[in-house]
Length: 213
Length: 128
Image 1 (tube, chains in turn orange, purple):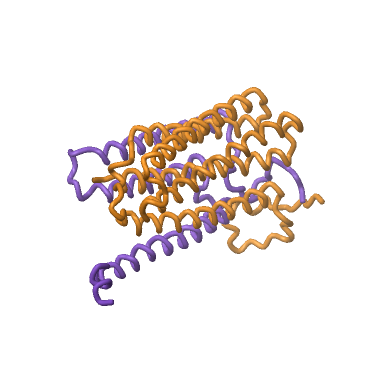
Image 2 (tube, rainbow over the protein chains, first blue to last red; image 1 turned 120 degrees about the vertical axis):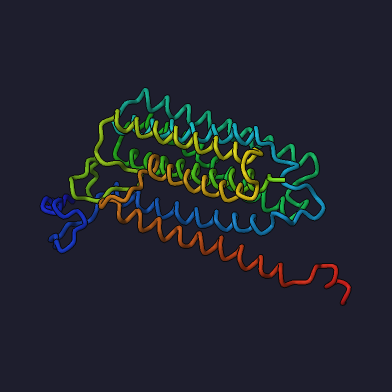
């Protein structure tokens, strides 16, 4: 179903004020898909805001357990942050490569993104395992419950993102740069960048603000 | 629906989609975003552990830096701009932000008041 609308005259009036376009037709599928995914991402961010609110309320409720300053290691957090930032960059490179249909740079960008994501997950998992081993698990205090649920929820998202990333590489390998594969790649890039935005909130609020003595 | 990748001029942009640029310009955009994000991150970590600035200003500075960095990510990585072809994406984002501020701000506000107005837990226990 190809709808060829003449929207040329709308360029002179980019905000479409007072211009009646006869039957502009449905937006291209690429826009509809990405817009729907954008709405999902925003709802995901709203969900994270609930975890952030819970953390902000419970950060002082340590029930005699450790405070944030006693258990957070800023060096690890800095490494995690750099990993995610660089992975966001390489993910952007991979999506440019997908747009110009360059397999080599696509695979390279996605592989680097995957490795950086796995390094992030490994550091986070080690931190969690270390805390639990010291008896500071999520059941120790309300503060630790809020901490584990917020940071753990972000970690789960990153794990899902890594799985999605591998799926995208497999799809490009098997099907090539088809239009539907490119749409999924676009959604994946949005997802990965959105996770980075949430991590900015996590390291600022949880580790830097919550880690202040 | 049509499956085209190249959008004729005058159409909206999908979230994450850039206006038509050359590959070099697009890569440059990501490089600028990465450099800005790394600078803001480094500043955050430096501010959090330094004695050089007035201590009560640190939480405010951290929050401002975090919001600035989120803005950098939105513009350079997610390509959400104020351009006319981006109106739908910006409006959705604005609504999402409204909910986020209502949830976080409302929770912190109400819970702080409840905490301030409630007698300490041991007094409640003694009355029973």
